[in-house]
Image (cartoon, rainbow, N blue to C red):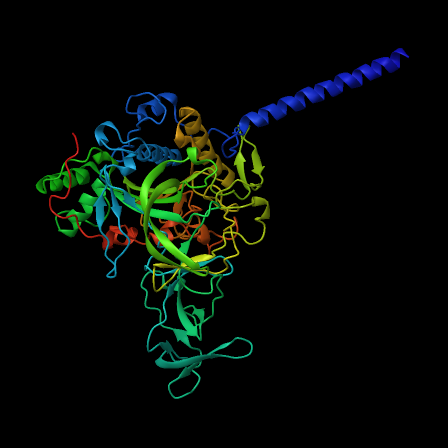
Length: 604
């Protein structure tokens, strides 16, 4: 009897211990999951951090405060010793841009709304853009689509394997090369019962082994020629092979709608240093072979500005910056207080035709920030740092790995559930995802074509959660995807913990940042695919080389987190192959210079 009692007591004691430990583990897990934010692993290896004293030094007052003014990172003295230096630069710049425009900036709202930044207009009929300086009493203007073009400034399509191509549009009096490589005029194109194409010349004869004439100079192997067969588009590569695409047409200018039934709106901006530099280059007063990266280049810009009667920028050491921002209407957002907001003018649409929305006016409304590309030149890197941020509730992540404090690799399952702004139910995002249902008309940007009005959600997902593929070495410093992911998660955790608990910027996440080794000319590929003959892969995108923002590159993410040489595209696929600003930036070459004495004097 005693033995039985002892056994029962032992069992009960063991159960109690298990329950106690289990409850504690549940409490630990609950503590590591923010009740109002996206879950980030809290046991991640602290591989990218910022000290408390350094973080305090970012603030104008030298101390962290709720929504306090953060000063910009010094791009002139940027250390660039390791990946973390780039990630810290990205974090500090985002916090500065979204700081309140007080004191030096003497404006309302945030620094991005202050006179430090200029709106860049969409291209006009001649392809030209203008810069409009932000003023405290002027409302910003946003557009309902973002142009996404490749290095030759051509539309993009993705084939069914995930590879991205540029597309040359159909030409009048189309010619192709025949089997002897001679140019032959095409009269018409036919297809047989199996869908095979035949090119017919003006004499009615079939052109054998027809190959398109690719005119693009940059990376022509990744350019397709579009041909029209009736109303259908077909795409041929330089070898004359038909490429099957996910889209039925060329044209990558997708529109995106949130679960609150608001379109996503976009604003492109540049800072004052960028505006001065561009104008000086256009006037032949400044060297324009690359963006400024040194103190001497900065001083040349300031000296030039002085000759124009312009005030010295309050933050000249920020060097040249270009921002792409994405916004959604605050109306019907379930957690509106968690967003940075602005007042802006947006287009209104006649939606009487559910398949075709047509702009019919403009209205002023409150917009909430959902995404931002922060791009800037720094010491040693004229190719610029390309960083991107998203609101934590935008879209669910696909599965990813990270390294924990015990140096073990752990797996995180794909996000599930509801409550995402661009995904009605992440549990359903197993098959089709990142569905492009809305496309800006290729001939009239005032029209949005809707493929299926019954589709209510784009089912958006970040395929490469933290900007790297799941099956390759991401860069020379991080030997596994888990190591790279850990750096981004680590810096996010540190910044969020150090910000005041009520700081609205805690709701935004750094998704990643990319650059090239030593500031070399980008080759359009991500590490380690681009420089097969170069042991240090100079032109490859490193850091988090396969970045995508689900509000701006929604439809041009890879279909899989795994990568290969054919689809290892980086930011530098579209913004690459040169360090010249005209090629690196998609807006620099089309922006009209500032008029004389257009700059209002900022307080010194």
